[in-house]
Image (cartoon, rainbow, N blue to C red):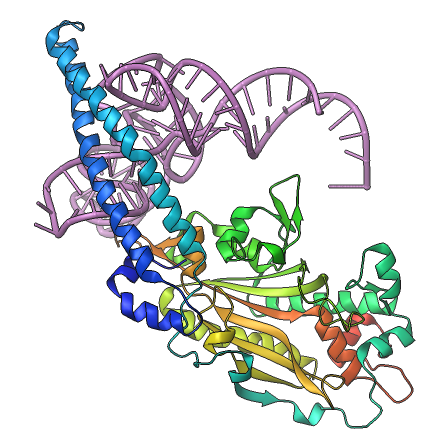
Length: 428
RNA sequence: GGAGAGGUGGCAGAGUGGUCGAAUGCGCUCGACUUGAAAUCGAGUGUACCGCAAGGUACCGAGGGUUCGAAUCCCUCCCUCUCCGCCA
């Protein structure tokens, strides 16, 4: 959520920057906010008088005035009159407040000045590449679903029976590889100073609102109809809410967390081709990283967060590139995002980079929604933290990348060296 | 699912209609004493909004009601805890 006061004071600037990602009328909100402030002042004045009357009545009665006498009655009458006026204004005030809240919650974050301007993913900017030498050569490279199904380690058809399309069942070494990847990635992040969190996978609406999935993207998540609970679409959601409504000490920052969770996404509107792939599923596993940091450091923290995600791909010797998202492709809550794209030989005509991680700085956007603040000792007041999140990495897509990049002519798949201790074998 | 108890400031815990944003204790911050520390003593110590400020307003789980006045009374909801049942 954006700060209405900042918008008010820098309307043009906000309008311009927000215009880089869509059409939003901030002027209307500012106007409503002005109305609300006027009403607030009016109500507060009435309330001041009312409070005064309340105290006076109490004091007079205590000092022996007749509770039924004229003097007290006059005050009570005035009190009643104020009450009537407030009862008149109150609904308007509530309505305005709700209106402003609704509008603000639907407005995305404004891009960081460093975010390149562009309309969609075609205008994202490649920042760097790594591991060209690991790109497999050859003409008969098979797509990962063929490799996997031939080996009997993943099964899409039977998953339809169990659930529906866009689900996968991992079997034998496939399941083991998935587990190994989760374990390996968590170990790496913990080694780098991230504290592991294993959060609830069912989460309430407030948590989804805090990170930005609600109210705008309700149709993207699975909902438990009988409860105020949703299946988590990413660990970002529960972990962002870990410190919701809390005031942290400045000394606590930065806080680094990593978390494994399954992720559930409805992927509404994406039905059709390629249901036998690990790239877009209703349920997938992911290891995620988070940072709660001091505002002054979030820019640098995004760089190191991205590097941490990259270190996983490097350890697995999977070729990738880093892409900076342009303003039009930015996620709802982000001000600046780097995507990591892994090389997939089966994609496109003859191989292509496909997203495997997304590392974002959300600034104070989520912190304001969730009231995640910190206090510097000696200083007055509180400040909002900055939140960052990054996949480290999406497990299913990592599995796909391994099956494709590590396949061998005989149909088997080499296991990346760093995973071999976890798998206790070196080939699938 | 059944029965009961309860939700007050960082924590503990008082307050059951009137100057209560809220006693007291602990904790924390600053100061004094001390060679230093402990102990002791003194001062301070919630959040948010409006305002240049003085100050004002709101918040005692949430929402509504009664009243001149509600932490305190009434209604609805949510959550937590304990016991029983069921269960991995």
